[in-house]
Image 1 (cartoon, one colour):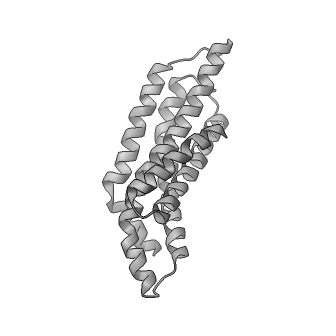
Image 2 (cartoon, one colour):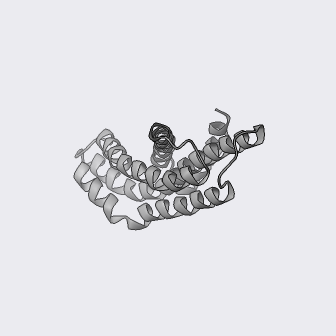
Length: 173
């Protein structure tokens, strides 16, 4: 299953390039808007916090919304193989989770790199890696939630409604 999932992931160019393209444009836009923030006053610090929050959450939301149609499309294969007692649902979940992780790391590095230095964050390698790690973890959590909701709900519209109801709750915590 892992090999087949890897091939399917590589063949879905629109899914992978779409996520990366949208996020690169979004992050460059944030970088231009918040270019070289002065964090010596309270307003600058609040702006820096808002940049970190918005970009991290937007990455997770875009990854979550992008993965749902892909998982709904692949459900038929999973249901067919489960009904013929070929595989259980757990190997599918593990394979999809394992194949998404390298893409999430790549997305985090490609998108955070220009933003990090455009807005004037601390130019230390440890701080950059920590920011990327937080971005990866939040994106992976949102993506996993999107996969789970897409597998549970009957239609893509129901899945999108379910995740959109959960997004404000995620903003609170």
